[in-house]
Length: 485
Image (cartoon, rainbow, N blue to C red; front, side, top):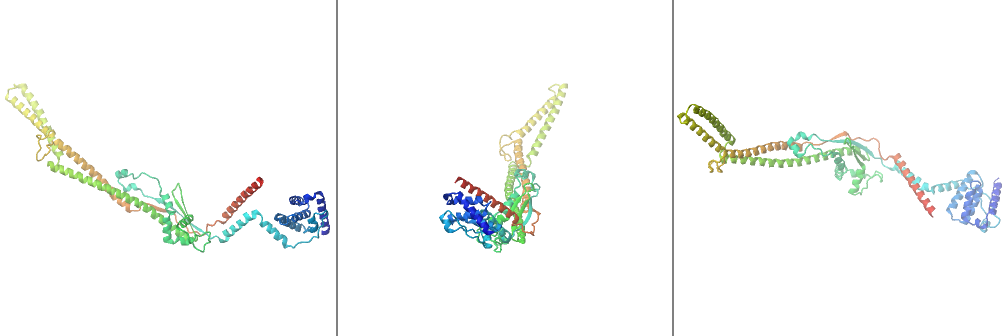
């Protein structure tokens, strides 16, 4: 049966050669294209034509791959394989071609060739093999990482209760400047100061550079301080909820216990930091209020000195009382004058102006007017226009009273300012030594039971998608270059 099939293939090859000319039979591109055309309807004939192409170009890798593919397909269909054309006839391109005997290859040879052909395919080299290597690393090599989570909230008591109302308005206390505490906590957790504290407390760098961890996941033992900070920032994630202002901290480590301890230390240190900022602000405010209090106290002392000096200079205990007494005397004289006028009019109605009673009444009235003018002069005019021992400047009572009132008002204002400043000072001292802000734990640090990283399924799917996308882009670029050429 094999001999019959071989004879038929030889006849078909002879017919094929008669249909073409000698030039086409020697054209490698033409022979390869014809072999591809007939391979679907006549695989043995295509195999013989491809052998002619191998004779024309013995080192052609594509031709060898096509021959190996034809051999595999012929082996599966149990058709004659390894049809060898006589070398003398093939090389001379004579009018008659003879076909050698058909032999059956070894069973392992087609499988090996097929495997080589599969490996040489671009999609296998650039997609399948990298993905397999990555899968081996993710499943069997990558070290597990555990994540501990904690949630904290910064709270502050009402500061209006610790400040006098008048001073609160002056200092601007109670006017909100925006809640930036969560952002301060976030920045501090990411800072090098926090890393230095954790290194001194827990030796965090030694944990992240442990040699038992795979080399792609761990920190290099020769890493610089900047590299250590970048690695630490990748292992810690801080999110701030814009609505509730809750700070959510995610901490990753290579063991669940260390992740829990690290999360607790970060929360405690963040609370210390936010309180240290509050105390710094409180101390600065205390220094400011102490300075203002000293100025207010000095102002009060100066007001007292001026008032005492004025009283000692004019030998006055209370000019206001003296002025009130003089005013009372003036009012009494005016009352007596009114009575004297009434008496005088009554006497004149019944007596002549020369009558002794009328003369006495007129003299009394004149004396009252003179006394009234004298008392008014004491209030409004200088005492004789000349200074005396008790009145060096020769001031009137009203002038003394005006100056005394000024000194007294200044003293009262200084006393009120001193009282308010003293209250604010005492409350500021209390404010500086108490805890101003609290870091409330909404969720205590959790002890992880399962490793969250690496996410094997997600990473493998993502890596496959990226490889396929890059491979597709490469195919498009190669096709475009070929088209342009």
